[in-house]
Image (tube, rainbow over all chains, first blue to last red; front, side, top):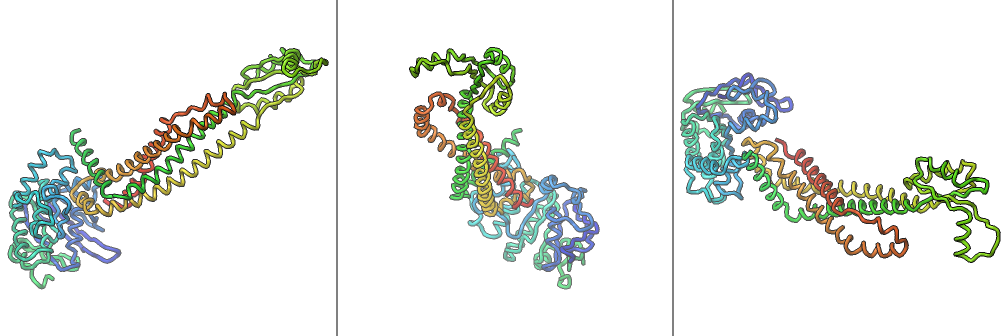
Length: 228
Length: 290
């Protein structure tokens, strides 16, 4: 599903990622770990084509992202769900409208919007908050709205960039468990995090970066201190 | 098709949200653009009027050619009518002229001192200076006379107004572009989160940028409406006064002073929408990186 081949990314001569080779299969659930500056966010940005690699190839569902034209980038992103650390919700819009926002922009029929948004809110357990505003929700609930928005289009790949960075440990675990449940429905989930307790509690595939290099890739792994 | 309509509807909603978010700066942009368009429209109306005036004057311009007694008026008239610049040649014989003069001024009974005269009407007033030298070269014509200066002055004023109007409109349009650019930039800043979300969720640049371009076009259209209202006011309240004054001076001229306010309004609207939408397109291209 996700494949990186000899990927390097430099910023003004200094390397952010060096020779990364990686494959994440369909429906897989993986953590991308490493300390700040390890290259996690750069790698995530390469996956949703916010950045292009200096060298090497990034492929999603067999499509080489290097070869995408500007006009094809939106089509790629419609097949990805992206979850952010800062939730990126519109405070002036209700929960329902936040989730429906992009569907409406894509010209989806209103009945279909209703159906899909209700279903996504049901998955994240927020049907009862559909008319609330983000400012009326807890951090965990806001992140659930972000997850609902990410899955509303039914993407085969879900990318979560530090989704628990602004949450307390108990809520963080709930959010990651929610993402794991979504993964069990066949969605490939990649979570970038430096939250060691969460990673260790889940015991799933751990891909570790350090100084822009891939230093570990272990199934049922731990986030060990020496990785950092 | 239905999907495109739904997207268009959402773009319109986003445009309205953008207008609401811009608050008072909407009026700043619209009023500056309205001033620019009023000047443009006013100058356009004035030059059209002056053009009509020159044409009306020109239709009355005729060259009077005075012939020596040795020349046969009919032969010379026939010769002159062959020039392409000539529309009509009227012969006034020295006897007819003398009779009229005697009738009008009650002159003493002396020998007729007047020459045979040809009144030459032109196909276009611009041709005066082309035809006059040709006539001067003809040995069968003693002298010629024509009221060139007034027509030339009016034409000069018209050209000056056209240039000055274009310059002022261009300068004000440039100022408007800057104000529109700043306003749209502020809207983009205020809505950067929405733009980022839309972009990352796979919404195309058309949907993201279009509301800003539409907002600029709305500014242009609103400014054109304001400018039209101002010109309509001038048309209704000031024109009759000007016409009265002109009528007392030269009745024939007022017959050709009608001009089309609808045409001017459409031109102002087109210019306003082009400046508004163009300014927004440029700004959104500069500040929205997708």
